[in-house]
Amino acid sequence: MLLLLLTLVSVQTEQCGLCHPEERVQFEASIHSQELIMCSDCHGGNPDTVSVDDAHKGDFRNLKEREEIPGHCASCHSDPQKMRVYNLPTDQYALYKISHHGISLAAGNTDAAVCTDCHGTHGILKSSDPESRVYVRNVPATCGQCHARPDEAASGDHESSPLGDYLKSVHGRELLEQGNTNAPDCSRCHGIHGATPPGVGDVGRMCGNCHTSALRAFRDSPHAAAMIEAGIPECIACHENHATETSDYHDLAEICLDCHDQDSPQHDTGKKMEVLFARAQDEVDKARQVIEEAQSIP
Image (tube, rainbow, N blue to C red):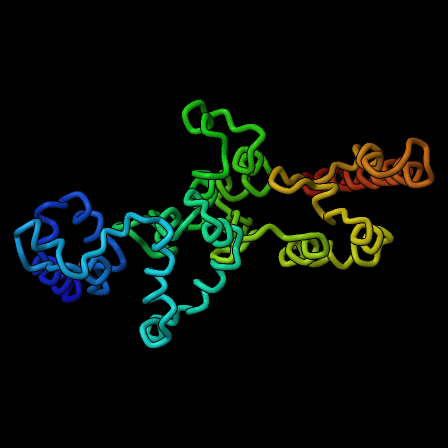
């Protein structure tokens, strides 16, 4: 309660909200407001005057130029002294600059994502807040602002785009339909501020962060070295990337044909594996039935 009162008192000492009431409402609910970071801390100017001209004089910054936003946010978020009390990392701006977003922005593409596209502007919330744009279950929609077809949001037709593929994937269903927050959102595979698609040789490592036993089995297989040498991205060659799905044993031989010829030794192995999996599944079903019958005996 004391923090809330201090925040309200501090906000009221700046007059910016008289002309910017919508921004003020958003700001008062933000983490910056809670930490007593005020409008003038970002925008400069004279926050004590009620004159529009005087408020926008001096060191006033409107921050409308997108290319200046990452550096401006970094003026605090890259400062170890300022971030120390929050235990927040200070290397995120450095990571951003080597990300696809940062590189694209530096090359002159002002449509590339900057801090405010993901975190918001005045209403920035903690990532742990379910209302935050970067809360784990909201990340796909946030990334989808750019990584989706323009017509998808209006039509609800999510096809053939990173967002559309993710929504129908096993990862997307687990996170958004089942509420499993351990399921990967976009950032778990691409990174956060240093967002960059994993390359050949790194895909397996990335997937192995969750699928440890599958990674060990893959590395012991003849596929691992051969796929990397051939420049084939490991796991996603069979499971897809954004449209990730588990492989049904009924489709093993068909999947093998993506790389191997029809009726090749590898394709024959795939067909044999299908038969073995089918037999194993049949035995599991029989065992389950026996257990259910035994449990039903009074």
